[in-house]
Amino acid sequence: MKHGGFIPRTGDERASGDRVKAHFVNRTLFILNFHGVGRSSTTVTSTEQRFRVDVSFFEDIIDLVRGRGDVQLTFDDSNESDHEIALPTLLARHMTAKIFVVAHRIGQRNYLSEAQLKTLASAGMSIGCHGMHHRPWTGLSEQELHTELVDAKNRLAEIIDQPVDEAACPFGAYDRRVLGAVRHYGYRRIYTTDECPAFTDSWIQPRFSIKRSHDLSQVEKLVTQVPKGCRKLWWAVKMKWRAMI
Ligand SMILES: [Zn+2]
Image 1 (cartoon, helix red, strand yellow):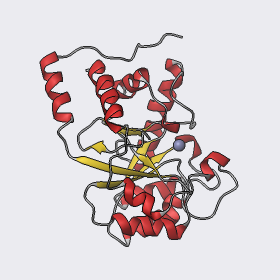
Image 2 (cartoon, helix red, strand yellow):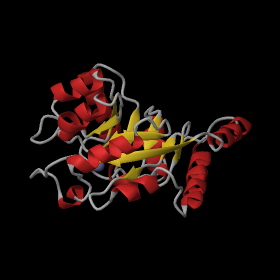
Image 3 (cartoon, protein in one colour):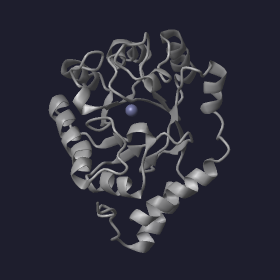
């Protein structure tokens, strides 16, 4: 399998340097990522169950970050609770979120239906792509990547009748080749789960995954403190970014 075919290397180096510099003086963002709210469903895996949170804990988190312009909310995996629980909770507080959808799951039991997806989009939630089959994008063939990144986003765009230009990589797995492919296929942002704050204008957006085992004081720390090791992560991201432009 040929690797590296998606990594673009053209462009003016000086302009690229300016962009990298600008990238790192941008405002810090704390992005929280959820994977289902409320009672367990039979179709989610045990790994996904570890990230599913109770309704009351979810509401406490939403109230904690309400009004915080430097906090964003995202939801992965297309759980039906994105529509049934998260949507009314957010709308009642005049808040929005980004919903990253697995295209092949649409209409399956306990996952979002086409109608629910349309409702989320028309209610002001941003719809992004979480791939076609919920598999890691690292190590896929070019054809498989096309399925995950292009066919999936086209299906979503057709349903909501809007362009889809943000992606979240399943299992937080990415490498330079994945980043190159995501960029090649026209995505405006990629969301990871690197457990660090992001920067407002960065193309790569690290997020914090909320786990069932968290408590509210731990979540409060996530949205107020920069964890140790983030400078190293930011540097690695900067190098990946620089290699691509
Ligand atoms: Zn996922």
